[in-house]
Length: 322
Image 1 (spheres, rainbow, N blue to C red):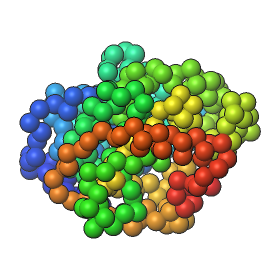
Image 2 (cartoon, rainbow, N blue to C red; image 1 turned 90 degrees about the horizontal axis):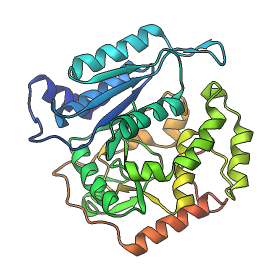
Image 3 (spheres, rainbow, N blue to C red; image 1 turned 120 degrees about the vertical axis):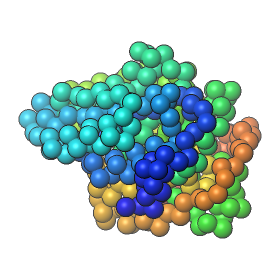
Image 4 (cartoon, one colour; image 1 turned 135 degrees about the vertical axis):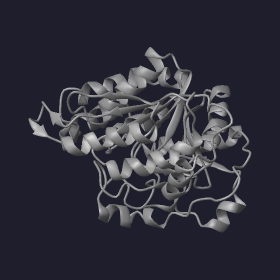
C-alpha cells in the first residue's frame, strides 16, 4: 500500500487528525471496479473529513447495454461499495443499475451536486489519486481564488508530479497550469459556463459504450470549432471547453497527491512507467499559504493551452495522448 494511504489508514483507525470544521464543499467519489485503488483513496481522504461533510460515492455498474458486454465484475463493484460504507459510514452511495462509463458517471455526479444539491463548489475524486493530508485544505484555498476570479475553472493540488523534493520546497507557494483533471474541484458558475460545450460532447458518447466511442466524430466536433485535438476522452472535452471560453485550470507546484492508476480505462503499466508516475515525490510539511495568480500568469497559461489545442506546443508530459 502507498505510504500516503497507509498514513491515512492509521489516522482513520485510531481516530486522529479529525478536521476542526467542515471542509465547506461536497465531495463526489467516482468508482468502478478497482476496490484496491479505491480503498487507498478513501483512507487518504478519511482523516481530512468529518460527519458534517457530504461525501457521495457514484458507483458505476457492470453491464453495458450498448455493447452487450459485462464491463466490470459484480463482485469487485460490491467490494467498492462495501469499502466506502466501512471507511466513510455516514457517506451516501448512488449506484448505477448499468454501466454508464466515466463520462456519464461524471455527468450524473456533477448534475446531482450542482443541480439537485445546488452546491456552489464541489470536489470530484476518482479512485486512483491518493491524497496527502494537505489536499483538501489546499483545494479549499484554490476554490476561494476560483470564486473570486471567473477566469479560473478547475483547480487541483496534485502538482508537478515529476518535481523533486527540493524544488517543491523552494516553490511551495507557486501555482502552475493543470494537465489532467485529477482530483479537480470547480465552482457551480464554472460548470454552468461550460455546459453548452460539454452537452454537445456528451451527445457523441451518450448512446454508446464509452470505451468504443466514435473517435472520428469527436475529432470532427473539435475541428468544426477550430480546435486540432486528437484526444477524445471526457477529460479532454473539459480542457477544450475551458480554453474556448478563456478559462484556465490551476494546480499547485508541490505534489499534494500521488497518482496510482497503473491500470484503467486510459492507462496501462507500460504507459504508467513511461510517464514516470511511479517517481512522484509527495510534498511533506504544513500546507502553504497561496496567493492568487497574477494577470500575466493567467494570460500566459491560457495562450499555451490554446496553442496546444490548435495543434502546436508540447504535450502535457511524455506519453500523454497515446
